[in-house]
Amino acid sequence: MKTTLPSAVLILGLTLPGSAIADEYACRSLEGESPVTLDFALRSASDAYSVTSAAFQIEGDIGYSTVASEPTALATVTGVEATSEDVRFSLHYTDANYDGDVATVHVVTLADGAQILTAGVLRVVGGGLWPVRCEIDYEG
Image (cartoon, rainbow, N blue to C red; front, side):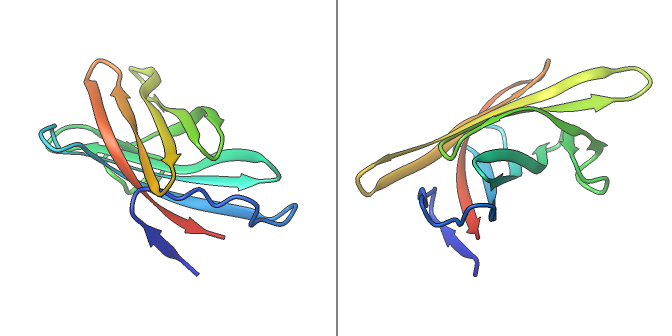
């Protein structure tokens, strides 16, 4: 069953040992900022986390993805550091003229009582810094 929640809700203690959960993050730049989208999937299994897919697009400009058909340039995920509340990773791109990270992502989920917020930053190497707010689809 797939449930869409505004921002994020931490669901703890619902996984069986050895089971895997994939959470889909859909992040958008904050109002007043240049339009940016950032989407990624975080998979957790046995207290280990991995980013299984990621893509970002700056409207009218560059974009990178781990999927060949999205958006314009194929990248790989590197340097993943993640918990259920804090996700960091980079997107790495290689071609004949460049071999390096093109973007870094840092997203944090904070909760205080009933108030929950998932937000972070997309930093594009040589291109800028965008604050983003995220919604998460939890799959289990």
